[in-house]
Image (cartoon, rainbow, N blue to C red; front, side, top):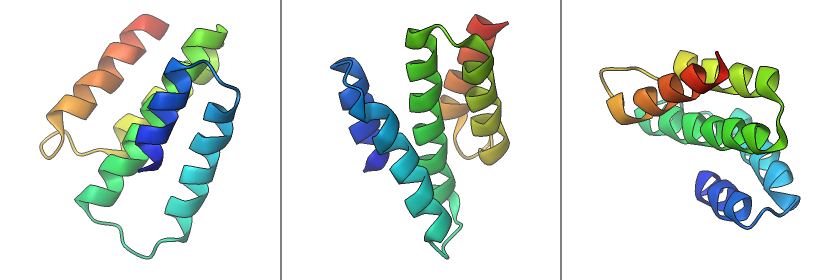
Length: 93
């Protein structure tokens, strides 16, 4: 849910996108559940953060967000999201 809000806000270039992403990560930290769906949600939020950092021209922060997304994901369970993170890293490097 938060990941969707991040992408929608980012497309509109609103400053609230950053806050929505950080709120989403904070909410995820409080959840006791750590299954595959949880990891996908966290990765989507981090991908949104990486894209927002790219739009701001902050490439080091963008790279960090994409690397964190790759660490959270399992490539076998979420190959599409892992591919997006690798593509973002390719842009950063």
